[in-house]
View 1 (spheres, helix red, strand yellow):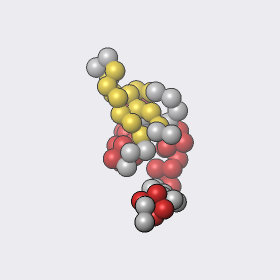
View 2: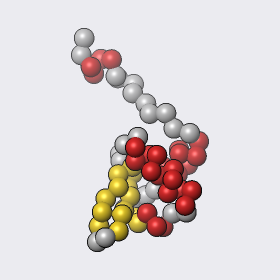
View 3: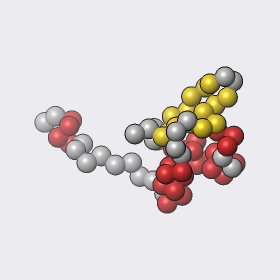
Length: 66
C-alpha cells in the first residue's frame, strides 16, 4: 500500500483562533505588524508548517503556505 493511498485526506488540526489568524495572513508581511498574541499563534502555525517565516533585510517576514 502506498503512502498516498493512506493520506488522501490529510488535515492539520487548528483551533478557531489559529484558523482566524491564518486567514488574516495575506502576502509577505513583517512579524511586527501583528499583535503579541497574534505573533504567538503565528509561531504555532509555523511549527505546523502552515505559515513560513523568512528573514528579509534583518526583519522576519511571514506568509501563508498554500
